[in-house]
Length: 469
Image (tube, rainbow, N blue to C red; front, side, top):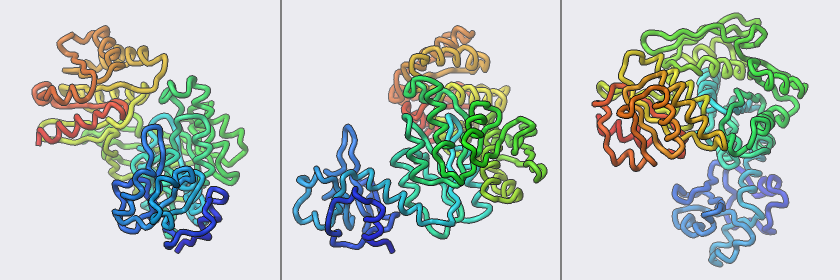
């Protein structure tokens, strides 16, 4: 049971109230930032943003059963007098939430916490890693893609003393983000998968993006073990410079976990062969094939080995892995195959996804539904045009549908590459596409949907599944 003394130690000067609230201290798992999902005995943490202020929902949270709440000093006037004894006054509610999560994590001395970042493949690799770790002991994995300054503390508050492992992913929207997450979560193993062009419009240059991703090495604890992609000299050299213990993965003969081969099987599965330094070779069979999965498997394997997982648990944990919803997730509705790759997109992942579909469904009538790749900055139009001309046109789908203003450059590139005008259709947004009620079964037998999450192509996948059941 946590006490207010625990919270005061963790929050330090962030806690303003001189007296404790008139209710017992919450367990970490009882903290909630969403008044809409408050349950009995939860503790409400009102967050603030440009267009919202959670303090306005404190009374609603209490009416739903919340036991108490944090509140920022400047917002005290919004609180009815009868509710103030139930609250803990702080200088910043988000910071209080983060400090509490960080304090709780420090109490879990025996937990092996593994964290990874990269421009593409973070969530898939994290789920592969979690599958491996679960085969070896009690494991927690980041919920959904809770990988930012709010999501990571939400994950930390779910950790319990009985866990052996935790697998988290770290994302970044600006320099310093990953540094902050490292300091809060104190990971035991850290991994950097790759550095591509995702969010390039936010960071301004590849150099800034690389420097931010490298924070996971520079700011992890001194005794942490680093997992570096040996195929990228930028990543490898910077990992070595920290002087911390480093394990590598990749296709190089010098990699600690070397990807030896990958084979596409007739039943849609994939066989991957790895060499594990002095531990010999293992073969892994996944339930779904993708161009990027072999290197993702190598990365997850390296992280698991660094945590002390046995080779047998690695093969057992990955046996039959079938992917995750929103990230190349295959569903079949009668004679229509729907591939949901709608969670995110950048030029590298888009090219890999199109190459995968072309190879896995050769001879099929493929319908591509491609949305904007967001946050690419000044190179956005050029990148979209290249994808259309060099990847979509090469695949030669039966039909191309684009969604969003930037994706119109992709459509133009596809026409330049040889697609006929009648093969291409463009919509400004997802609502226009949904309203069109396209009969996809008439156009082909495979639908591949991919775009940045903000385009909401997942709504189309849901509509296709519902209509064709």
